[in-house]
Amino acid sequence: MIVRTVAAPKLTDLVAAIMRGGGCDAHEATMVARRLVDSNLVGHDSHGVIRVGKYLEWMRSGWLRPNQSPSIAFESDTIAIIDGNRGFGQVVGEFAGKTGTAKAAKSGIAMVGLRNCGHLGRVGDWAELAAAEGQVSLHFLNTSGAQRVAPFGGSDRRLSTNPITVGVPVAGGDPVILDVTTSMVAEGKLFVAINKGERVPPGWIIDKHGKPTTEPKDFYDGGALLTVGAHKGSGLSIIVDLLAGAISTGRSSDPDDTVLRNNMLSIYIAPAVYDSDGAVSREVARFVEWVKAS
Image (cartoon, rainbow, N blue to C red; front, side, top):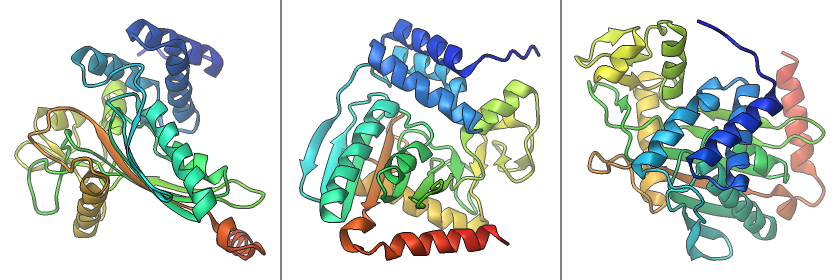
């Protein structure tokens, strides 16, 4: 296998050019390219430029629509329900994040339901966006038309990978970000393993017969990912599917939904609204330093 090193700015320009060729306008192409390359730079190759081919495929199929503007289906002082109209998640997700942080900055807390949008990429992006505004955020995401995960005790796909992301800002330092799937890994990790000609660790996947396997290609031959933490992770995944799907007014995992679409429920908390003396910020910093000193 030939490996080439490409500088991030050049790679961003290349990906943007490809996305323009696929139908994106210049602004959207640049936003998508920047988010993908940034995912590679922070070590998440599964959500990086490896996705470009799939994005082009999804645009050709009509699952992903370039140059879409999100629409607001419901809005109050603390709640927004946003329809992504199958637009790029990198664009729609930023709109949803800015909507949520703006509401939380006024009211102290906000909820945003985002439905029917394209691949949202690395969900940690949206937690980082909120943290940059001094806000805590929680994000629950599913893919209603993409069952990839077997529930505990099951032998076939019933759930999506259902990630959970939480961000907590730290004064004077990097935010604390938890960005994990409730499956053992994101499906993109299997893409990476296949491209590298590698097997995956035991416990990640089962084959189409429900038997454990370490061959990533078995997943694409009717196999399934497993949840993290056995029954506990399975329960968590089910809850995420409900929050991200049904509660956001989108769809929870549904075999009748033939379109690959992300749905996400996000909660934003602005401590500055109720903590005028900065006690929250000081306590977060104290705790983080104490844990890091272990």
